[in-house]
Image (cartoon, rainbow, N blue to C red; front, top):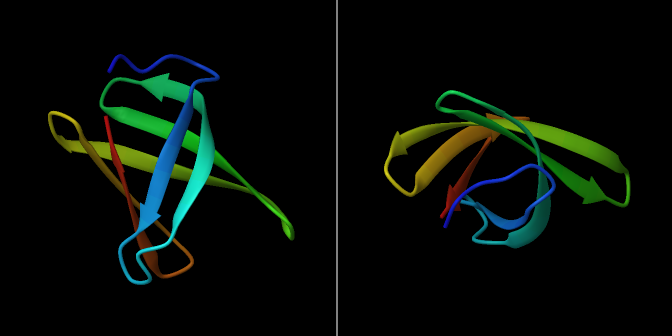
Length: 68
C-alpha cells in the first residue's frame, strides 16, 4: 500500500491491542505523522518506518504500530 496524505489507516496500540482509525497528515522520508481523532481531542503520533510495511511510534508512554 502506498502512503498518501489524508489516507485513512489503522493504528494499533501494542499494550492494549486496540485499533483506531487515523489520518496521515505528514510524510517526510521514513517518518509519517498520523492524526487520531479521539473524543478528548486530536492526537498526532510520529511514526518511523522500522522495516518495509511496519511503522512504530509512541505517545503518552504507549507504543503504536501501523502496517501498510
